Image 1 (cartoon, rainbow, N blue to C red):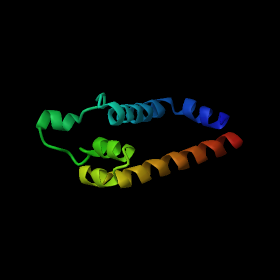
Image 2: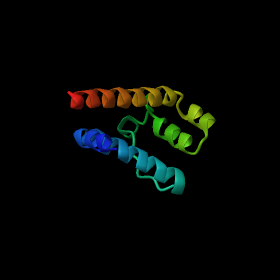
Image 3: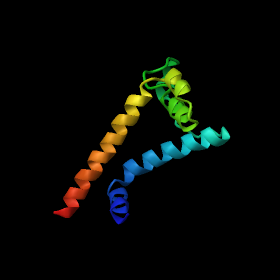
Image 4: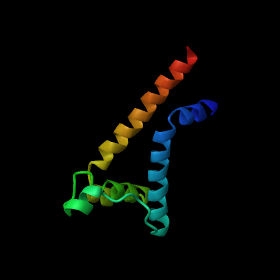
Length: 100
């Protein structure tokens, strides 16, 4: 458990971004209160970018609605796998670095 706290301290900025994303998505899923970051591309050009719908898809996954997540943006399933793999490998690398 101490190792996880050391990892979080070492990666403060990344942890803050990930925690904000998860917290704001969970808050929206539970209460409908939206504090998620809007898509700047959509605000400026009024056209959806390839990433649009990822937050909505993540919220659907929090609500255990994989069909809604797929309809919002099927890329969410790839993103979840890639992000989890990144954190796992980065934590493993951090752990090995501390062991030396």
